[in-house]
Length: 312
Figure 1 (cartoon, rainbow, N blue to C red):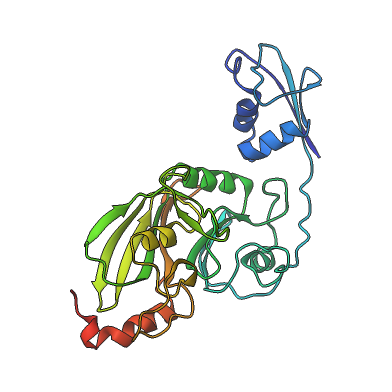
Figure 2 (cartoon, one colour; figure 1 turned 90 degrees about the vertical axis):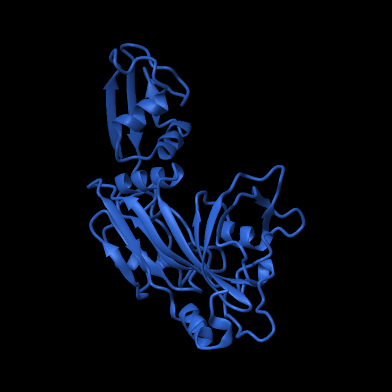
C-alpha cells in the first residue's frame, strides 16, 4: 500500500476532493480515485472524505492506495496480430470469433487471456492487475483494439474515447442497395423493450447516437460501406444500419441474413478498420490501420467479376 499526504494551499482551496486527488495523482484515473474515496481510503483532517467535499485552506489530505488486486485469470499463449506496440500501449488486430473480456462460462480463449500472456509487466490499472482495454468490439466484429499498458496511458486513452476525439472508421457489407452516397444516421439507441439481447432505436429514452456512412461500392444485392461512429453505443453501427433497412450481412440478430443468391457470411461483416488518436505519452498523432480480413475480402472478390460488381 502506498500513502500520499498533502496540505491544501490557496491554489487548491475550494476544489472538490476527487478533482484535487485526480490532479495530484496523474497515474490514477478519476473513477479509481472515486472508488478509493468511497472505500474510505481518502481522509481529510483524519476523517473519511467525500468526493464532493470542497477543500479549505490548510486541510490535511491523506490518500492510501492499496496494492492491485490480482486478477484470477489464466494467461494463455494465444497468437496476437500486433499492429503497434511500445511501453505505453498495444494495438491488436482482433480476429472475428474472439471475445474480448472473459465472462462466466467463457474464461479462456479471450483477448484478455492472450494479452496477459503477451504483456508480462502490466501494472495495476483501475486497482486490478489486468490489461487496460479501454474500448470493446463485439465477438464477431474484427479489427483494431487498443490496450493501455500503464495507468497513465489508460487515463489518457479513456479520456480521448469519452471526449470523442478518437476517429474510428469501420468497413461493412450491408444487405441491399444503399441509395444515398453518404449520410448520417442519428437514431437514439437503447435496450430493446422485449428482446433483451438486442439494442434498438428509441426516439424517447435512448441515448443519442450518430454514425456517418459513405458508399464505397454498390452491388446488386449488397453495399460495401465505410462508417464513422461519432458516439460509441452498444451495437451502434449494426442497429443504425438495421433501422435504415440495410442490416449488416451475416448479422442474424438484426435481420442481416444473406439475400437469396448470395454466398453466406459466417459472421456479421463488420470490421474496425482504422483508429486515429493521440499517443498517451508523446502527444503525437497515431494512425492505426487494419486491412480487410480474409472472409470479407473473399466475399467481395467473389462478386467483383460478375454483373453484380458494377457501381450502381
